[in-house]
Image (cartoon, rainbow, N blue to C red; front, side, top):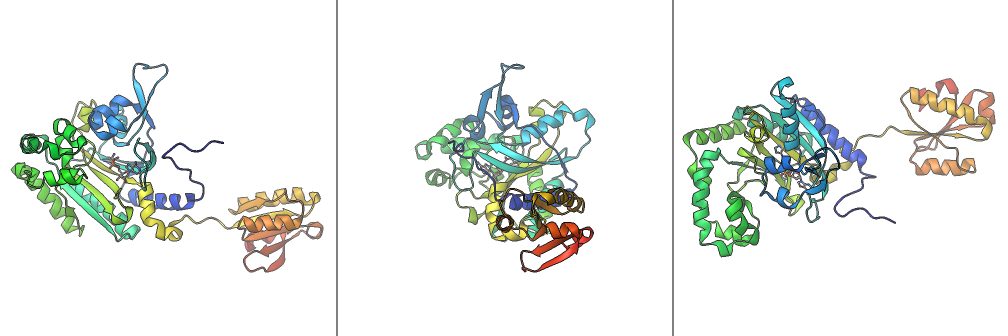
Length: 417
Ligand code: HAM
């Protein structure tokens, strides 16, 4: 017997809930002019090293890497840990034929080698949303508003907080990074092991480290906002004003940096206390230089986000019945003897053509055992075909919920079930 690999999940009984939620999101996105795309799960490792940064935890520690056979055998490939780099890679490959804004979403599995816990898997699902080729900060307002109304109005989630921060331009951060590093130099021993490395490699990530001692060490640290140019400050103000205009409430979290290096300017996360330690169920931001980092000759300012489906579903669990996709009522057909089997096959055909969900029960030894099976399958109606029904071109219809039984003409059966 085999068991599943650590950190992955089978999904047998939840699919109606999953697809109900997924379709609700997709319908919402379509109203904001996003189109669906698919991108591969396999990409070259170098795409993520370049796009997300060599030093990010996702790239340095969490990738499922494998050797490719044939082709560019010198190149390692991996299971995608996220979808933004792949979407941008695909956009750049077809850039000459695509007009912007290129507003797309994709849905599927992502893979990260992390310690599994509630809301954290090694194979998990994201609804990934990107607006490629959008410059104005008003697009940031619109994307955040779109998510806000999805969570608040469509799903009626009331216990979430939108955390927002502004990382400015690389020029804004250059001086700050030096000041922040200098500040931390003589507090090095207070930092966790990870942050001692980050001090050299990715100092900004120390800002959102969860360790208490790191948080204590940075209480008096210089603030990135104090290093912003007048233009950056004005943009941040525009973002805040736009969101306030649309009644989107947020918390300005100056320590929100996010774990992927491609972000600049706007970063945000939707968090819920219902989720425990893994509290973010959607995260994103602006990534204006990613296209050029991945080889585009021109700048393609862009922004996007991803919704963590497992975490969203944990939050929506109390509304499972309401959100689950509705199944068609099941109709089971039971021929009483071999002589009625051909007629039963015709009836399956006829009812399916009328848009019904039909199951033909043939394998039980007796009508009684087939009736029991229909009941276990949750059938709403059972259609019995016996000698009598065959003679009179009729069928006995049993309503499994009320117990009521009636005989109707075979040509009329689609009207009563
Ligand atoms: P991320 O913050 O790494 O961003 O992931 C987005 C969401 O995916 C998280 O907020 C969380 O809900 C979910 N998630 C992440 N890791 C796991 C895990 N191990 N198990 C379960 N859920 C998880 C990105 O991936 C960016 N590519 C988002 C983006 C798109 N930014 C711009 N465009």
